[in-house]
Structure formats: structure tokens, C-alpha cells
Length: 101
Image 1 (cartoon, rainbow, N blue to C red):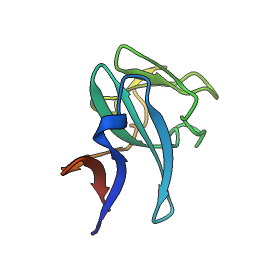
Image 2 (image 1 turned 30 degrees about the horizontal axis):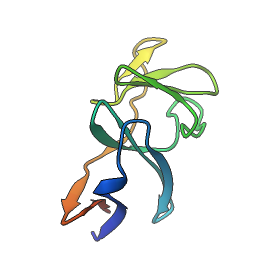
Image 3 (image 1 turned 60 degrees about the vertical axis):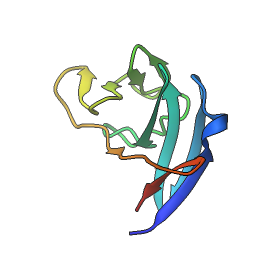
């Protein structure tokens, strides 16, 4: 595993979104409610990118078919129990935020 810096902390604010591909894994770094989140940029339902999904109250909604997921735990909210969103632990290193993959 290796640390991959994603962004400087000073650039994070609510509404922030940025796509990355690390080791072939599509990732989406976003921030809402003062909390940065790193998720796989792929809806587990049909693989649709989540980059342009609506985010509100800690939930991201897939723009393709409307499935929604809790950002805090990845659980599917609508249409009901279903595959979970893949989440990654963020690592803070100095003035940067990143991931260990």
C-alpha cells in the first residue's frame, strides 16, 4: 500500500468534488457538512459515475437510475436494501488529505 495525496486541505469546502483514478480505481473525493468523503466513483447498481449525483443531507443520489446511498456508511437507501457504496478511509498527512491504496 502507498499513500496517494489527493488534495490540499485548504481547498476543501462544502460542495467540493473531484474525480481521481488510482491503480485503475475510479474515486470521488467530495465534502458535505464539513466532512470530506472518499467513495468509489461508480454506482454499485449499474456502474454509473457518481460525479454529478445530487448530494443532500449526507446522501448521494446516482444520476443514472436514482439509487441513493448514505455517505457515512455506504448503505443503500433507495430503492431499499441493495449493494453498498464502496468507501475509502481518508488519511491526513500534513496539509494534505489522501488515501492509502
